[in-house]
Length: 189
Image 1: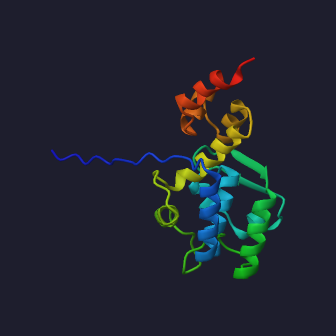
Image 2: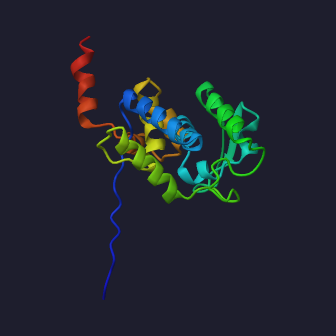
């Protein structure tokens, strides 16, 4: 009996804002679609399956995005940040898209695949010198990680990511024991 084992690489959030900026700059120079994928991914917390299914109509209002999550079946409605609004406007202006999938492939009738998105992000990360494992889930984890670092309560992030508990969210966004221990070291009341 031959059993194949698929080993999935565990990806991490991009913790360093300079690396995020370097990725943005690189992707923007390569392909405006890929730049938007990255910007919208790290600012929305959407799973890649939901991100790739977005249509031009989903973002044309420029104020909110409403989706039904593929994995959970739950509705998700959230405001679009200024950074995302600018990236969307730039993308739509550059492409002239009026309808269809936001992240369409060469033929235009279908969105790019998860594998294509993985390759885009992974190649860009390696190009800018990121050594940690990067994949499509990195976008969602980066959103959660930076929300946490900016002081957003972990239970709110848990709700945004539809996790079952705060401990799941902390593990998911890669909060290390060292970072938690630092609370004890720096508090000094």
